[in-house]
Amino acid sequence: MVLAWKRKESILVEVVQRNGGQKTVDGKRFRTGGGVLWNILKIRDPNAYKEIMAKGKEFEGRR
Image (tube, rainbow, N blue to C red; front, side, top):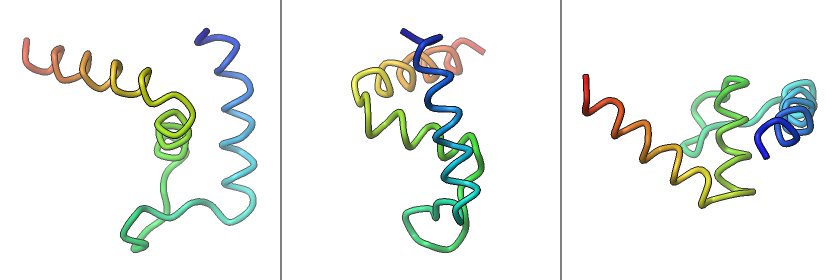
């Protein structure tokens, strides 16, 4: 799933950035490419986003 998803979404991130970018929720600044990608993931596959975030928190807790 990740490899097929990666190519399509990386192109979408580039398109978003070339067309003025994407502001953060508070509207004070623009998202980085990575921020745009995370936002796309959160919208398109909320369960995968939640799983990744949970694993990240779990990993951070081990350090």
